[in-house]
Length: 325
Length: 311
Ligand SMILES: Nc1ncnc2c1ncn2[C@@H]1O[C@H](COP(=O)(O)OP(=O)(O)OP(=O)(O)O)[C@@H](O)[C@H]1O
Ligand SMILES: [Mg+2]
Image (cartoon, rainbow over all chains, first blue to last red; front, top):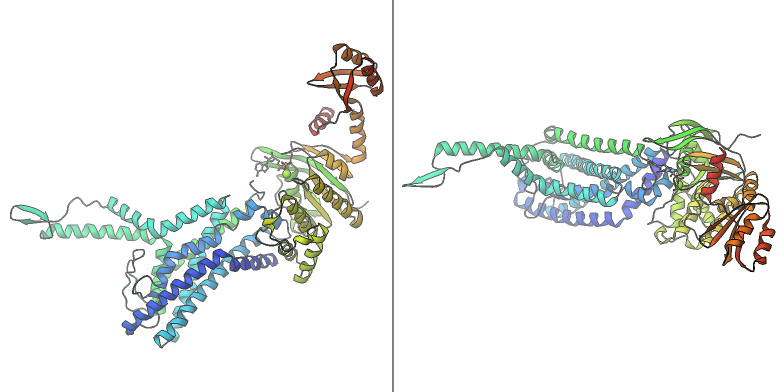
């Protein structure tokens, strides 16, 4: 355990001082400040919404939740993707493991350090947003609101830690950092772009629509919506497509997060396409209702986190450590 | 008689269907500098990884400083300083910071680590490079840092995997002197691997030769050198300016010469007793000139072959 703590301290110091972390931190702080500003403006126009809307509301650009949907994967992955393989190729892993520590201290220490760095980022981002919004709005969160914010913070940290553990897994499974970086970028693109295209493609393939509703004007038949039977059939098919699309989108962790986060903030998230927040802008859930609604999502993210970490852990413990070996 | 520092019994490591280490029986006693000699792929690194618990044996058992290599590997790593094969460091940290980290991992206090790190950088001749990031270090400097790293825990046994690999002659000499000094001044037991016979001969008190995962021979150096020099003295390598066939015939005719072999521009003479002087006289009589004459050095491979034939 003492070994873990030493590894943790060193890795955390490395993260906090690294250019990579500072760049990500800067981007997130800048964008979230912007979104806090937007959120506040939005709130001024919709004064009945309550303080929490600064995290979900938007006028242009995106809200905190969308920021995390878009950047979350890359933040988490980039803190983890070269954790092990870089040390393996440079040979520092051999040096490290020839010290009186157990192997798991290394992977535990590294994971916890990454998670701590992510927590620092999340807490400061949310803190800064609140700090900006209070003077802009002239009021702060209610006592209940504070609980919501804490829940949102914890959820966000867990979500980022999931990406971290996936990155860690890549770093254990691959020998070269270039490979694990590529895997990370591919994962990120899949979650933010490819999956919605894929969902559309699959839905269209599964539910083919062979006709368009028609209208008869005189003798000519043109596309239109006068034939009531055709129209209702068409609508049913479209709905089918839509639900398949949603099912596919649901498996994306980014979507699981945005749904859960919206629920925690008290907005009912209807099916949200990535990048487009379709949540209805009404505070209509209490925190416990929100948590109850998002319980499944939270559990899935947690399981994903655990599975990635456990697989990395086992793989790492069985690994031959010589460089290149 | 004190307990051996390293003792292996039938140690075996199999990778898939490849036996990297085959039934190794080895004893290293306190105060020895043990040279583990073998060509590339012989199983040296495999053995070392097993000894410090970084790899698990397929069968057999071993103790290091009395600790079982499987069950008590952490105790071993607490007391054994290891310079791994291709020891690496954190490139973006200074030499000092790298060593401090290693110190902390060995449960030294922060101040103690700092102090030890500074001292050891002086010891290995990197004092001036203390605050320079390791990415700027040459191969040789990293190797020295590797030795400093192994010493920070005040080990009772030092295991060095090819400590002079990639070093120039001056660097090799420095490391050799450091090893000898540590052994002499602190009585530190040292186990080092190498594929250079010469290096082992200059440094070690005891030698084990390994090839294809098998220990070929293991003995005190002075016992081995006798064998080696004996055979060295009985073979000559000559370079003669325009050797004629008659000359070679005549050399072959000398009592005590068993064989003459001409290979490219060299002539190899094998003798049953030392008749070097006779050979030299014969060449002079023929009016030929000797360009080179020296006892033939056995390459490592030939020594292995020799021991294989005997075994
Ligand atoms: N993880 C592994 N999987 C399969 N074979 C391995 C593995 N590690 C080592 N080997 C094989 O075991 C044999 C012994 O390797 P080892 O590294 O011990 O040799 P060595 O004596 O240290 O050689 P060198 O002088 O090149 O360092 C080699 O033939 C090598 O290919
Ligand atoms: Mg080796």
